[in-house]
Image 1: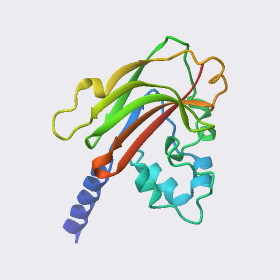
Image 2 (image 1 turned 90 degrees about the vertical axis):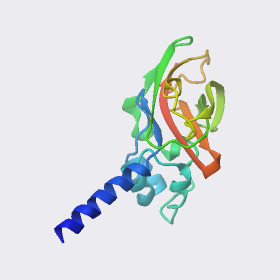
Image 3 (image 1 turned 180 degrees about the vertical axis):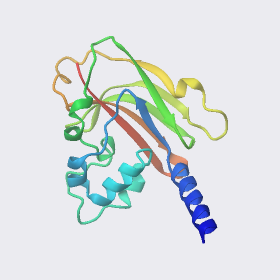
Image 4 (image 1 turned 30 degrees about the vertical axis):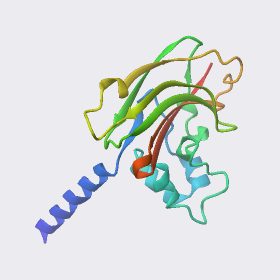
Length: 188
């Protein structure tokens, strides 16, 4: 029995690492919290809390009666500014911002980094960095796909209020129908 439990634990540990995919690891990205749980439901909250590297399509599979109309899975994976007020960064126009991406399971696709207005879920600047052959399974992932810098454009007053704008890393692996994203709240 003990041997079976160890084998089961090892299998579960392996499964948890193979279902993970990618996130921004720096600067601080949006995290799940109580506002996210209230808006998107406890099943989606549990899924994202246990594996922040997952994709939006996986979240969609857990939409249920607890999921409110305000849950926007294709805006920062549904993660909310209300849970991340202490993570807001401040950048100035022309500032170079280093971005680190952590990929745990590659899938060939396209990726980019843009500035998104969270009120409209529209790109207002960018892409600031594009990767046309992103995180390919056909070759080693080049260092410039996981460690690069973006230059913050002049955005006027559009991003002067915390929670209004995010730096969004977006990766679409169309061949397997999976989309990943991370958001960094910032002001200018």
